Length: 454
Image 1 (cartoon, one colour):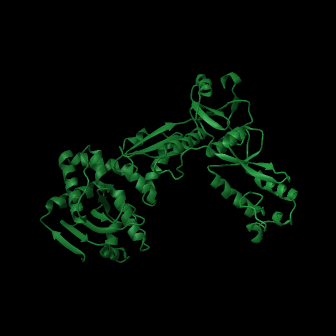
Image 2: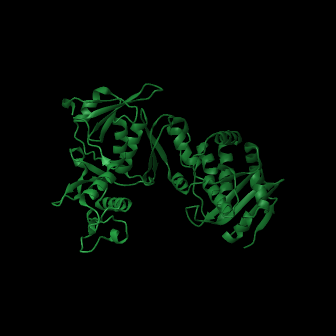
Image 3: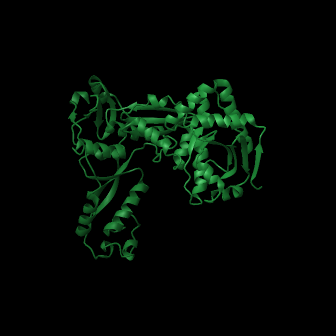
């Protein structure tokens, strides 16, 4: 279907609406309705688009009913591109609509920049109910116009103008979030939680919670994952911490135990394994797998892995990088011929007698040195003290055998945390954080708890 345009002089009510919105925003407006091929703007497409603009006192309604009809709009000399430059885009869900328009123009190597006003958000600011749109693009445009008419009739012109002025000054938020959250969100360090209708969506950590949360929603136009999440967020909560270590420890724990839908490194917390070296009767050092409880033993351990498969992958890469023998590392079943890596000229020849056992042992130990797991250097639990320099708030993090047992802001609760039975498992991310903190790589004071407290 070709582009059609109709000048509706009889639509004085719509014309008055567009004039009112233009005065409130300080520039002309274009109101949009559209249909989409799917929920992901970076790979889905606009399937239909309808626009309403005001030319003098005439409402112009334009409809494009297919992706093929929409494609010509993206050519630089098309009149619609002049329209975008000096109009505000108003739509039912303006950020989502803008994301699809921007992606459509980007496919034609055009950079579309628009200012947007969300009709849903306007109604919510006026404490009016919001309803979903249905039908094709022209029907959705009509419903959006009716929604804006209703907002003017229900709240009055002055309230609508005040609401628009407020929204212009506010950072962009997803349509279903209460905008008072911006004022409530702290500017301090901590962790934050995005909640949706189906449960927990995301856990993040931040030095400044408000700033970090708002950055999610300012990036949603250029990041499909952020946009998808923004459309699902219904509520946000947070936990304040005295410093970044406390936030990092909580984030690592919550991601693994709560399994938020959108966290990238989503994995259930599980017992890790590590490898040690033991000599066979010929004196050849070979890897053996132990669970992470052995991290506190006196023997040398290397690497923390979530499964034997992950450990084997590590060993294969180690063998390739350092010329080690597949047979010696138990990566291949021993045969009467040289190992596969020797045949590929990667192994230095232990398997065919070209290298001595002593030489292979030395290179294996040297290769593993960078992956050594620190044994717990204390006789019991320790408490790491973290203080917020801006206000003096302090968190006490109780740690034992590289496991975070818990934190408190009250010194008298420390011993209770240390004594309480816990199911805390050694966690790779927390281990790395705590090694830095406890071995002086981070400027955090710590002290050993008395044996009676442990």
